[in-house]
Image (cartoon, rainbow, N blue to C red; front, side, top):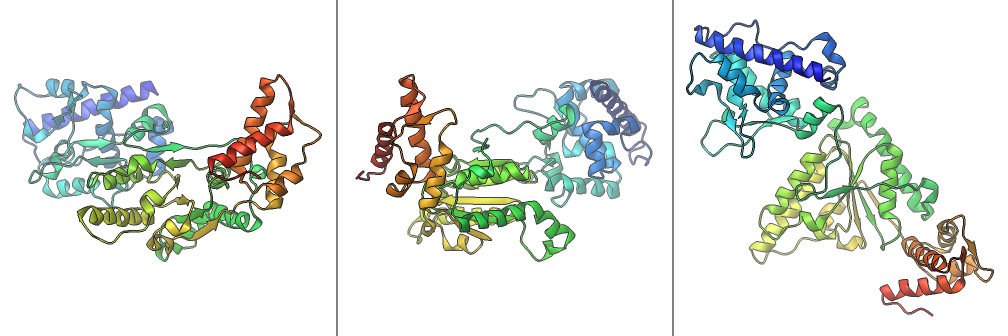
Length: 443
């Protein structure tokens, strides 16, 4: 891999030198020969080659990607090549280029690509500019784009930005999971549990199975069966019900059994009191998720998806704009979006009409509670003879999350006694603690 990348840099070096030489030789229009960096047959087995082949990337597009990749491989690459190729020192505006805030080397701009691939050939320049259009694969998949420029300046003077994810893919063969940060306020959630560990009401479970079917066969429906013209992209589901009823676990299991990453969005970091910042945060989030086939899980979605207010002041106006913007972004996302809330009534009706599935997670009934109690204990612990799980399930109307908390508390008490037996008092104290959290009275 390292050898191939070095060979690519040498080819780009020769290509740029030839273009500059051609310019000073008076061949400003450029001939069609030598307008691309040729990617050899032996290079097709690399991550870069596989990407070119899989996406049917033409040679001119390949050259653009390689020109954008070069400074990520060698920081001084362009400065060395230009210094060696120019007959004398001085400014050469036709070549474009800029310097970064932290990066001190030459960074190619759209003008750099126009010079190298089109020269003064106006028809060719227009053709090259199309590589940066919004309907091109590079923009659609957020692979490569031009940085915005100040108002009034030529668009092609913007720096070429190659997505860091694709830099990693082309150089290492894999893409690291994004880190939780202010620019990406989401965390990947996983579970070691199985479908059999999920205890839900039969009606809820049936609806979850239907959702799983869409995840598995949605692409076939949209593309092979031609429904993309008639249906909006993606799928939107609302999970509603009390805390601890299995909403987050269900989202994790859907991802686990369909091979998709599930990211839980931290809405406390998305919503901002500053005008325009919430939309900006959402734009960054969806841009990162686009074309990744991720499941986006908005927990406690009331914070952003709640009912819109009557406009009384500027703050209300912008709050409603944030909701409208989010509604638009969710509808355009070509994947599964799950909103979770404790109360369905809190969700704006404009959102509710756009969900393909609205799934209720009720407090478990007796049968579900008994199953949850039976599944909750570690295999190596023993229950004292006076513990009757059926009686506990009958007497205490609690959720699966609360049962897990109670069992954890009881197990820790047993461990502190150097005992492998759970006592009734352990469970009773755990139940009392859960009731106290909610301000309920234990009878």
